[in-house]
Amino acid sequence: FFFAGGGYRPAVSTDGLPSTQEEGTRLPQGSGQSRVLRLDDGRVRMFHISAGGISSSISTDEGLTFSLEGQRISAGAAGLSQLSGPGIVRLPDGRWRMYFSELDTPGAAIVPLPLKSASSTNLTTWTMDPGVRIGPGATLTRSAAHPTAIANADGSVTVFYFRNADMRLYSATSADGLSFTTESAVLERAADPDIVSVPGGGLRMYYNWFDAATGAYTISSARGM
Image (cartoon, rainbow, N blue to C red; front, side):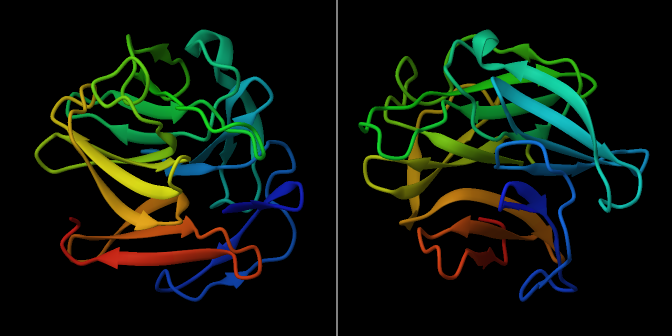
């Protein structure tokens, strides 16, 4: 699912590479940066930017139609002006953690943007985690925006995020999903990452390469590193 032309649009692929765009929009509301999860009961829930925060929408027909559920967390509760789309992982204890950042504004002055998180037991009610994960106020103080996240087999969490100062994509891993102390550059001129698992334990990342003519790009890692 991707946001274009004022709505969330679908594309389908049998192998995750070249994809066929389907007609129409799946959800007209929202402001971009969707993240989609399949629930234990088979339904599909989309989290996305909305006015003043992050909202969710639900589908019972494999993502053909979505119904808006409402706001899940507000920018005010997070102490930010407007939230980016979230990256969401399931923790070893069964809870969920959502990572998000201050949403940068095109053309605005480049300033460090904080990445924060919230936790939930049911994906609907979210409580802010104390402190800042990455950015001003954290151990890693430089900007971190537009995050996505994966839960690793050892219980740690890796977040991938965009840095506006050098237009690169970075990653950082935390044993508890809260304290991040080291980071690595992943790609140049890359933003808005999203990650899916592929057969054999690997990962595929989709991202924006600041090229409006060609849209989204993808890279993969056979070992998930």
